[in-house]
Length: 293
Ligand code: G1P
Image 1 (cartoon, rainbow, N blue to C red):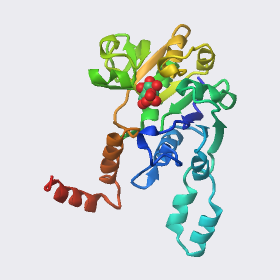
Image 2 (image 1 turned 90 degrees about the vertical axis):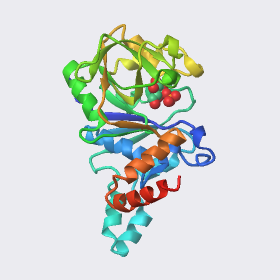
Image 3 (image 1 turned 180 degrees about the horizontal axis):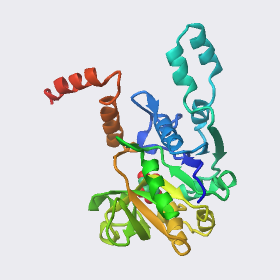
Image 4 (image 1 turned 120 degrees about the vertical axis):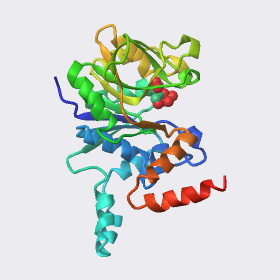
């Protein structure tokens, strides 16, 4: 079984739910406390073994490439002032052994198309896909590490899933499981992108974490436009099921939909309450403030 060394981060989306904040800056650069969303995703992928991060970008996404590059003026300035701690924060956005690659997605044709754009760099290897606006906070192994365990056991594509409410099925890709979850995993027999509640095959919704085998690229090439007139990754995985098995992994941890304002605020509050420099003072503030509500 080939190890997973590459992670694809589709970051070309417009982020319309955060306008005007995202008029000129990418939604993936919105900070949760003191780190941009895209850095949380990159750190998760690197901790799970990724050595090559493939960003699928679009217009207005330059700051993401700059964030993962050296910042000579800032670094020189911090060095001259002896600010070693800050210098380390700036330099260690990703470790030295990690390479970042950027591919422009010329047309906004959807998530499936974005993943297909990564084929020249990914080639014939299994790979991770992470959607940076899904922030996943865990206490032990991160979400991709948990999914990698299922990949090691099965050798198949693995989809990160969570239980969702019936009324929310139209926000997610929803899987059809083969029986019940056992030890947090279940084989997938089908999947539907954003079904109406009555058409949903289960209440297991796909979150923005995937391990995919390279067979997905051929499926993507043959996938017609689906929901929203976009090439959907979910539809391509459904096609892949004709040739290969796939599994779902219900990870342990909490997922925040940081593409929505409420999810973003929840992540900010909860991660601030875990932040070593902030947690005490912030908790005291929240306790005091909640009395005024
Ligand atoms: C995408 C996928 C969907 C998945 C969701 C998770 O949808 O198409 O299957 O459930 O991400 O966040 P989007 O939220 O980009 O519309």
